[in-house]
Length: 235
Image 1 (spheres, one colour):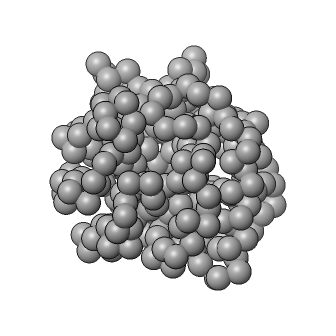
Image 2 (cartoon, rainbow, N blue to C red):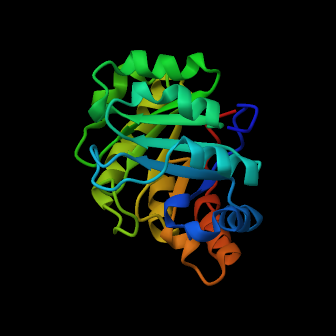
Image 3 (spheres, rainbow, N blue to C red):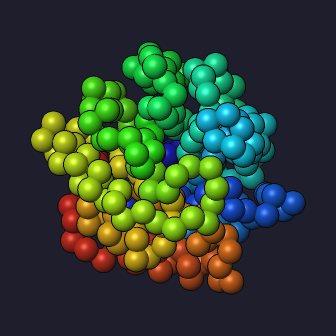
């Protein structure tokens, strides 16, 4: 995924803005981009689907003015269909909604694509991968949450790796081209496990933004997901 919606080479490191120092937001996002982050991941929380309240479309627009890399917007909110237009117009390149709050999931994903941007579907650790099989031919990305959503800094849940494997196998069998993204407790060791299972996009927040040397941290993460000889599944 690029600013022009053409998919970039994989694997991809996406820095999660949730862990940034918001008092210096423009500097923070510019710093991690200069350090090698390929996407920015923006967690939008409404205090309903998850307890915290975080960012709105205005923050997405502000980040888009500060950097020129893809903005990966993750809507952890109730009734996401009511907010797609605002985030699309704010500059999101990809909008991901949760299966758990989208009773009309196909319709919501189609509405995102109607704005000319990419769409994704997310599943929580307790949600089976099979629940989203009916929309895999529509999505550009599947986000496998590797922690329970809501707060940064949580430990990685290894049991989620089996879902990555299932989705990767399904992708290969059906000849599909969606990204598999992982978010939660991602650092070199957990990223390597996820990469071996078939993940392509690695969201890291605390690991990157809390590091003394962010460029070095991103480099170590990139090394951990690039050291194998897996063939890219996405052109």
